[in-house]
Length: 175
Image 1 (cartoon, helix red, strand yellow):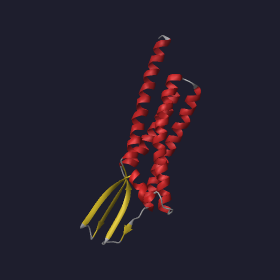
Image 2 (cartoon, one colour):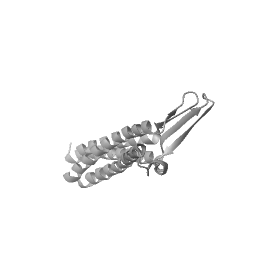
Image 3 (tube, rainbow, N blue to C red):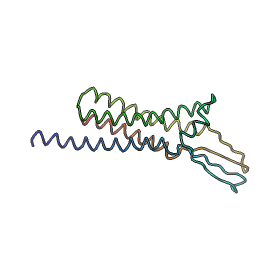
Image 4 (cartoon, one colour):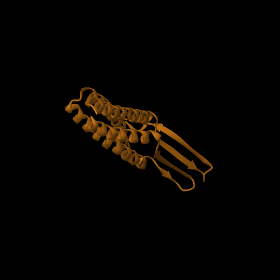
């Protein structure tokens, strides 16, 4: 097998990994833009019930400006969610530059960005659960109850960011 054939096979794997990072980065970005948490509640023994999906951007008005523990938990949650989306895009860009230029510096930066992306994705999910636990929950027995749970956006950002980072590490090791 000639040298050219070997490079072409490695090249196709690198392009597949780049495509995987692209898909995961898009998932992370979409996750930040759609419903992040769901607030649900019921009252009067189940006669009245409802739920509302809250986007991360809409929640800044309610929780972003205060100095309470809930506002602090929201700011941490929002920061790690947005940082995960940014780092997934940075992983994509660094993987592309590393593929084109092949410099070891970009490969190193890709590994660092990918590892930090995975860490931020995990922390994003953890802080979302922490925020949902601290958010206003009401339990008055049969009279009324409310709770918050992570919605699709939190999961897409966490999973997309973590997988973008893991695939980015694979792309760095492959190139």
